[in-house]
Length: 638
Ligand code: WT7
Image 1 (tube, rainbow, N blue to C red):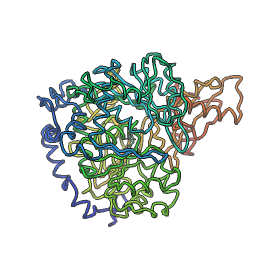
Image 2: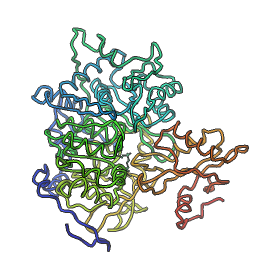
Image 3: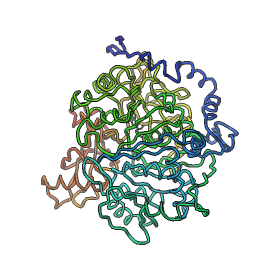
Image 4: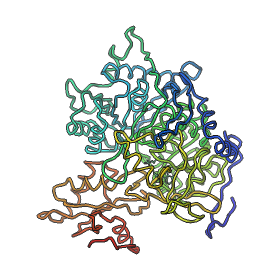
């Protein structure tokens, strides 16, 4: 380790270990970056040729309708043919695709053969329920193996899955079911989290009652506690799987994989934006497959003999790309854990790394900080020597947490891949490779073929050390294709701030060595424990309570969560401040959105700072809360 002086601050530079370098798929990033810069289409075509296509593409990138870019145009493919079918005709049918451990301790494993069989049978079930190519299916489950099975079964038959994170609650789920116009919802009787049962079926029932379009509900039995089942609408997963509907007419458990256009939608995933309702980001079969497979292979050097653990939830993009699709594309073994990192004790993660011999761990800074709090003794009781690489995602990792992760978990042997990306990008965009010299807290450089820059207000690149808007100047295969049912919003949100350039919504700076440092969101998105929430969602949950007239939500720094939600509320006349009311408001937000949206603090105020046109000035609230200068107040109406 050496110390450099960058922008006047000393920053540690961590050189790659010789072991990491020796194992690296890509030993010379600069060379790859140059190849991609010289011939973007050729670069991605070479990556795409590692997968099986029913029919080859005619054109790698069609930009004639930009920003509605198209990739691998004319190609016929199905991502599941590459995740499962392909492996099942080789020796790999007999290796583990998925290892799962429940919070309560049970273990389930699936070989590629077994996973494929389960997916085929469930795909047959879905077809028997009238689910066709292009139909949307909402999946609202805990972290159980049937969740990837359901996703893969949808993709196999060309249905578009819309997974809603199992930590969301009634209104968040209702909105997402309704917007996606799903007729089928797949859920669980409940899920285990932190020793308690999450009432997934009860929440689904209430959301479905609000939505009204749902015809069938398929329920996976996880907790076996009593749940109401509505006859003619609700079916047990295990019942369906044992019926003839799970099989072909001739009685076998196979299922034909649907031939898709490369550009056909694979899934949609809701995420929070600046204003109003969450928007459904749409990803495709072809480009997404090439993007996630390539990035996992290059960034984490994932090999088929590896056991990989992405500790995210499958309900977020991290889980879609890097628990489910990419590891299976690479023929690796993906480990999935159901519950809380500290249940029943703070060594749970470390004991599982030892037990399963995990080679690569990919986790969020909030989890690292949460575990760091319990001290080194917990990880030190376990043999973590199987680890080769570590990863971080979801928010900037503070150098203190980075160093702890590096020293205590990686024993100074394992480089940390701090990957910057988004639901929209589908794949890692700014990230180290194992050969990169690391600076704690920096996501380092753009992936080969990705062109990232930092713009000032005027759309001109800023100089070294200066903060500005992070933008992407070139399309990439796993990019979002549109916002479901709202192409105008797609153009408006991502391609209009600086014409022709993708606007990320993040601010960043680059140091004099060219390293990117992500600072945070510049819009009304709050990252709480790495989860993405919109101020608008929290505010609308608050004002849906009878006592609330107006509300404003902001994010303030928090030691473990990164940011915590602080809300300011104007009460309706007649409503009176009590501690009980505050607790009731918090419980209301949790009931409507979910525990992740629980405000740290709710303050009752008489008025809110607004512009003359009536928009709440959240930046003023934030500055006041932090005791910082309030900035330009010329538009303030107060
Ligand atoms: C936002 C996207 C990407 C999968 C999980 C989050 C923040 C993400 C990093 C990182 C600093 C990060 C950004 C981004 N973010 N990764 N390595 N360093 N910030 O996906 O929920 O769509 O959130 O997460 O603010 O815009 P998401």
